[in-house]
Image (tube, rainbow, N blue to C red; front, side, top):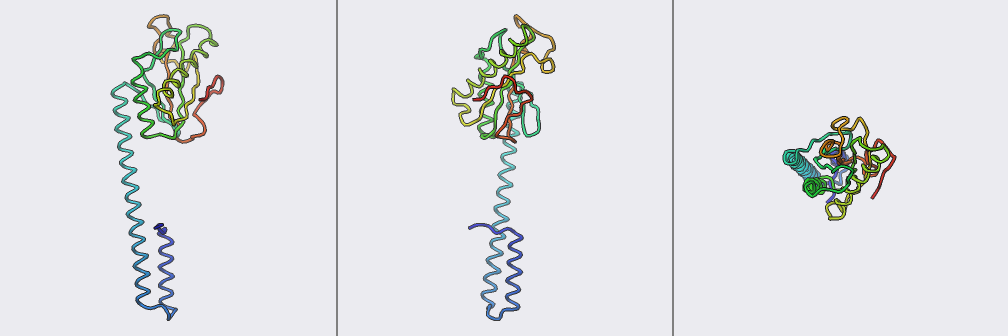
Length: 218
């Protein structure tokens, strides 16, 4: 049975009272029956609202717990943006390489689990970065290759088959280097050779990007 809005219920009750006062053909039994019906619908509506609130509170509590565990277990930092969450994850790459390391796959699997559970219809943007060694053009392409490597992993193993995955590269952008100026070869600059993961849950038709150059959509 479709629940009548409270305002409509009160209006209907007023109408019933008016009919009871002005229309002699309305019997007391009919009047009481209509009042009981309206009261029951109001009670049902209150119960449904309480159930929805309880469900929302439970989901929020579960989300907070899952995010806290994710941050603690994998040393992930989380940035809250307008309608989006950005995960700075410890997924790094060897010098001049876009190959995903085996050691970094568990954190991506956990990220996929959070998305499946709490943001199944969100747009996921993978941001790729490079250290400042090499030309800007090369690093732009390398950052895209790294982002696409993560997109490929998340889609090919079935982890996020229902999500919309996008890749974008920021290359060696100075304002996005974790350790300014650090570069390889070798372990130096590893912090800059990375990806970041963004869940855009407010605008499912567009990912939260600030650049349009070198964007790959899958």
